[in-house]
Length: 77
Image (cartoon, rainbow, N blue to C red):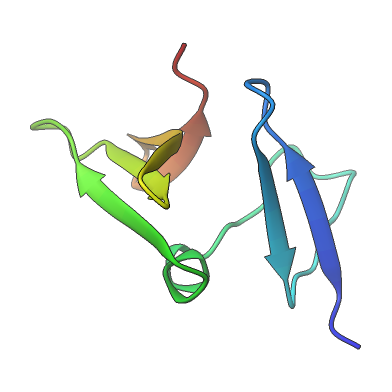
């Protein structure tokens, strides 16, 4: 059986990660945009800085901002 993780965002939406490794002691974990794409997510670059909005079934889930060439997810209310 593949490792699964359910992650609840502060807006109440849930992300189900399949085939994942999660380390609770890490300040940051890595999410593969390609894996999310394979699960049906779509993405849109939103500004000149390369921010990315993530959608699933047309519903906005989260924004990822570029920080030192790594994308960090943030909740936009």
